[in-house]
Length: 559
Image: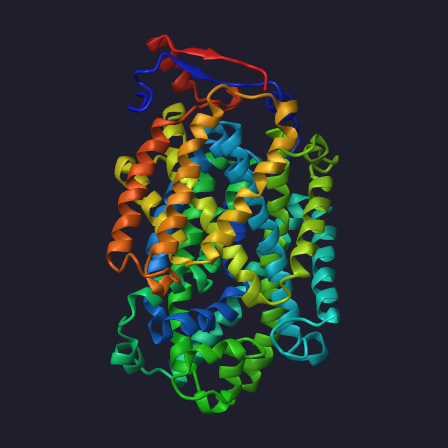
């Protein structure tokens, strides 16, 4: 192994212990009971939730029938990001790993900001899918829906919270039982989408729908905005969930990257076909919507696929989808409820949350972290009692958390030669960073402002613990580029194309060129600003040999 060009000329690399090492021992009490199948089910279980029921209509409301291009483009882009995280998860298998990589590569300030965003995204997704289940039940019991039909009634909100309580109870039983439950439910969740695809392609197969002029991407902006704001990214985002369970994996260095890549590949194939099936199944007259009024799809009171099946007279399929519309998002909520507790556990390990959230029960369950997730998920339900409203917040937070992965991967790849290695990393890592930058920009103004503001809301919380944690030298300098990067994206979003809510001072394609050029520049700045420091237990033996050869000084300092 040879150190990457980013570090070969440096004589000092700081690696800390202190709080992390003292708590890191607790991670050893996690039960290593998850194999490749269970880990893959965590990924697919997070992918296959409310998205297949709701996202096609949301995306079509923005991009029209060209939504199918959005699914394909987003799939390719997300696979690029998934490969980066597959390498990170394989190289550093630890509980809630996605919340730690920025800390390892750039220090505590940037580590907390990204970890905070990931944590908020996790608890918001848990709430989002619980709301989706309750909304699906409103098709059978209308009092669960609000009078306007755009969200849940107080009774419906109570049902959504009851689902969260169910997930909490299941988690108390231990990771083996949770993994078995999620695996069973994920396999069950596959049944109805496959039946829907078979039904539509058998009885309503009309390839001309996919090749007609109306499907041509005449509005590229609408297609691109549908990727972020249309719930597509939200739907694809479950590929990182196996990484959060790495401390409980039997063979994390091999199984984590496999589970991540398999989850992403399955999602691309499944959702692209579902997007095509939705276009074929739409019956404007039966749904009471004027022909071609795609935006009106958001006014539907239940899942668009349920309405489409009812319009075709497939009552048996409606019944199956009604059942699936409850347990499918319920299963996804269970995945995020479980993994978000590992994120809060990781934040406590890093010293950003109180130490009590890094405590484990005798069964290896972070009970207090689960309680924290339960409380915050409930808070998300109250102001956003609709799947369509919550997806705006959850999608944006998810996109923000992607951005640090490629930069951290470039810096941390020097510390290990074990596990999965990203092929052509010098090309794919900056490309993945450009992808995440596009996703943030496509989310559209003013949502870019809302989401970035929510992420930066973590700074005051970090300040509360900063005195107790101490300050690692250069932490502010190491994080400065990232804040400049976010502010640049905000400015481009505000001044950019009206298609993405901007002022129109920078028109297409110049706005996209500006995002790409600035992304490359900030990627280089981020790699140059790296300040790697991590628990010695995570270092590979190959790095230790290289350290001795180069006479690199590893210093342990208390945080």
